[in-house]
Amino acid sequence: MAARVRSESAQRVSGCVTALLREQPFFGSLALRLPVRADAGRETLASDGREIRYSPRWIAETDAHIIETAIARVVLACALKHHTRRGERDPDRWQRASQLVMGRRDRRSAVPPGLALLARLRPAAARLGPAAGREHAGAPAHQR
Image (cartoon, rainbow, N blue to C red; front, top):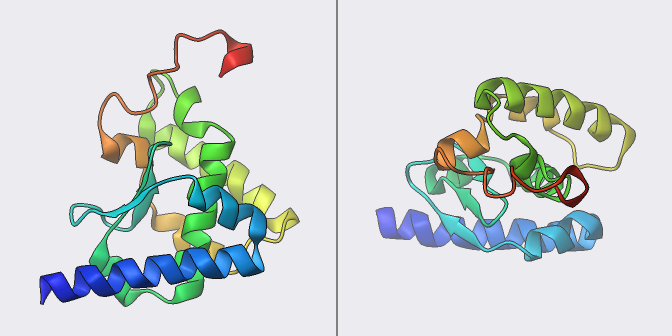
């Protein structure tokens, strides 16, 4: 059964990226630039700037527009380099601040509906490992 859920979730994620390409080409094209892989240890969906990882179980239980919104949010956060600018800051606090900024951007843009339901997403970089997002921390500000 686990293999079936993993396979079906991969198809759903692929379908959501395709829907983003059709309905929100900017976010869809950003999503195509990151490899996507299942990660049973994940609660929902997150990115470290190098790949998007998702919980097959969460994908199976979640509406497609919520998945599309989650993908749009993580790729926009990557485009804004949130994962590289955190440095030594507290991951939870950084994620909350990022969500406030993203929420303001979402209300002014054409991001798919369902953003309020994503408030439970936890800090992506913190869940992906202690060194995530620090590889560029020493670069000059104009290069971050």
